[in-house]
Image (cartoon, rainbow, N blue to C red; front, side):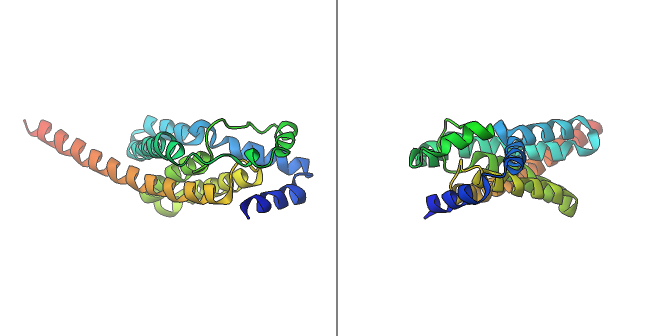
Length: 187
């Protein structure tokens, strides 16, 4: 059923070259965690946003361990092209990188949602653009047919949980840092 859904996307949209390029560009934001890493580094640079950067960094680390080291290996779900070899022609023509890891969960989706949710916990509605970007990345993974829809849903849920975890870990670190600083200042 999921493969048929992807085939329908292919038949309906992949002839739109301009949309293929847009989706390929959007999906790049999740490539190797680029958006999360860049966001964390930029936030860590400035004192005012440093703890938000720590939240994103913790979320990224949790996501990497849970998604890339544990789940992808444990579930070991093949990518859509293993059942549907013809799609690789589309990948070549649209410039889509053919990932070498397994399909579940979507790492691009997970890392983008991990960072976005950590930011939402820090900044509330001000972080809405991060959620929108994460949603676009998730849709791009399905649109490009490199993941099944359930891979993306799994990435969204797991990444969101990592974002929550990253936020709370950063709050613990922040409290410990402030407590240590207060103790040092009173000595």
